[in-house]
Image 1 (tube, protein in one colour):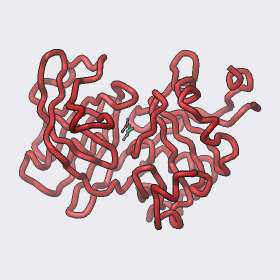
Image 2: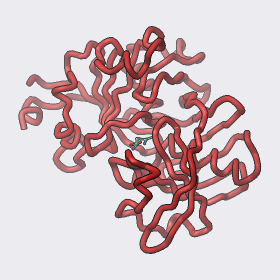
Image 3: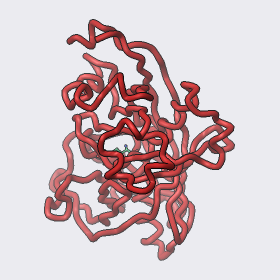
Image 4: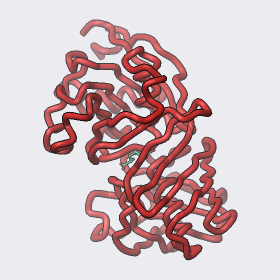
Length: 289
Ligand SMILES: N[C@@H](CCC[C@H](N)C(=O)O)C(=O)O
């Protein structure tokens, strides 16, 4: 295989290997298999990341018609996301902001054309993502969908939480235990009946009821990460509910920075930064490995 263009970047330090593949010829699905994803995300033998984002036009993604339906026509681009273990996820809130930033940085989309937002296809359906005036990006994530109550067990301690779908599954556990004291080296134990496809677990301290939280997260398919955009949305919704509010804007502090989540009667909007750290080539030598 010839050398291939690659970027690395992050959103609040949730970091990704990004593969520009506009015409779907560089990384067809059979080439970007779970083994290759794991190698790319390996922090010693690869580039390192919490996941991979393939930047591809929707027409080149075999399952895009199924996951996008009638929205296929308005989603020129598709965020083909993989977790570091090679699994796919329906949605990635930090990744989709980085995705748009890469489209702009690679000259595939004009930043000035992004103020109103453009539709991007994901396995969780279409999402509108746009450039914010402060240089960051916003994404309309759709409504939070609660689907029950669960618990996360960590080192013998049980944390009750709310099961919330943001396209992908979350268990948001509000707790008075200082999240900085938790050991998230191993994934928390959860109820497999409630989460048959696994779950991302957020441990959340309320700083100011309904307005400000801080969290740490253990992600499905990755382990502890320094941020999770969908997790921030699930945590914000749960914090608002606990405060007796159905709407509001919540500041969400994560180990890798700060996100803002606005919940209204219709949807959830996530705002935060996206950074391209480096761009270059995967060598033919590494690709042959
Ligand atoms: N870090 C992401 C979520 C990535 C997917 C997640 N690990 C899953 O399997 O659902 C985000 O910023 O939302």
